[in-house]
Length: 270
Length: 306
Image 1: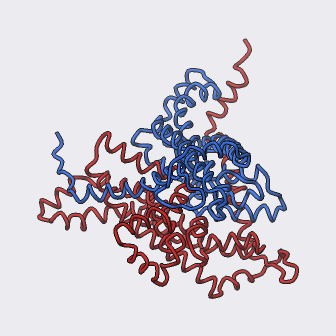
Image 2: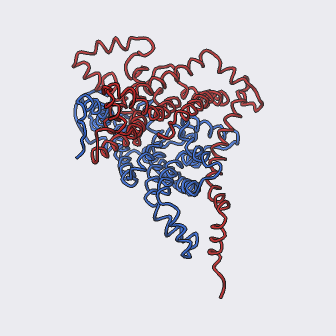
Image 3: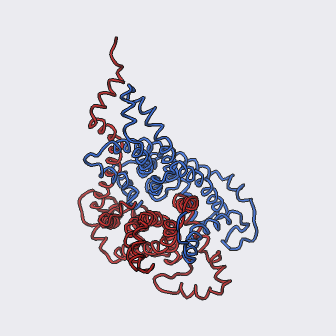
């Protein structure tokens, strides 16, 4: 057995404290979805009710925002899957001049503050005299979503190696067959993980979206609106509850898909 | 017999020309990032040298240093300093808070517990940032849970004293720099924990044993061996905490008081005020700061810890 020294008590306590700091706020937020109090944020809630879930269900503005967000996330994820996979395939092949620069370029939209990407796109739209549309949101989102797909696929390809691809070609498969029969099965779960992370990244994004959406209201923009000018407290509480419940599933799935130790660090690049 | 199919011939052709297939693979992603992203950044730089006509309010597309001159005003420098100060405070606090959990994960957790803890850190990182900010709006509210417990512990007097302090205070926690600091710390903390944990996991146990064998106390081993080796992880985490705080306008807008942060100022100038060139020039601040920061981090080897 391991000859571990046991963790000192204070360290366990401090670690638990940090965990509590991360999770107690979420529990508080979830509790508020059930409060009977409409106007203020008083704690403890005077009573509990399920009424607001029904009320939120009947809100057409919420449904419109939700469907816009889902459509944008789907389109951005599709683009990110194609672009991220191509970039990962290229970088995985061998060392070449400018390889480092490509990795940097893929990561940059996420490493620079979101506001930079947002105002840059806004400025380009202004100079080109383009108006805001569904696609201006999608273009922004796809740009910073590439990195999640790229990271997952590149990590997978590093482990798969090149010999299988060469073997497939040697045995007479053409490029298309090799891609479909060898490469795709090898990277399938990495694609799924990267795609789900891209989807949840896009679904939740608000900083860049603010600059590229114009008058359109995605779900995050709807929430921000309620944050700054609260009008429907109870409905906002329920929406927050819903968003957390819905996004937790793909995150846990994506994690279990890219479980291998080697990839754990890729999940964090946001 | 008719030779190999066109597909087959194309495959062989490409397989024998790695350079060409590389170009073909890279064409789309590089085209996208090059045109859409770098192009936009370029347009931002160009935009920052335009100016707004004072009378008509229309953007004049001629080179001018007007925006940068405006930027040098005390009010704007104030915004820049305030934002950088907040980003620094959040980064330092995040590093301090991340250490115990990261250390526990790296040194004392194994198997299922380690996976569970890892998930516990990743989950908030990926779950909705907005909802997590919203949760704090509920917590920090005057009639909210924090005030409730402070009142029960008879600490509300202390809270009032803290809120009365200049610079960090305000009318209530949900409208004060102190509250903002707490929320920033909360939302970006996981970005610090993960790289610090990764760096700590890579410190070989033998090194710690050697240090102990040579007579160092645990405290001394921590200071002289563990801490220096964990530093790249801290720097890697700080890239995120610093950059994300610099560019945020949601948290200052919902939790803060009336004093502006860079993100808010940029948002205001591109929107209602209609001075896109000034907004563009203003963004150059965070870009330059992050550029310097990234090159400093690269020298420290922080990118290997990512």
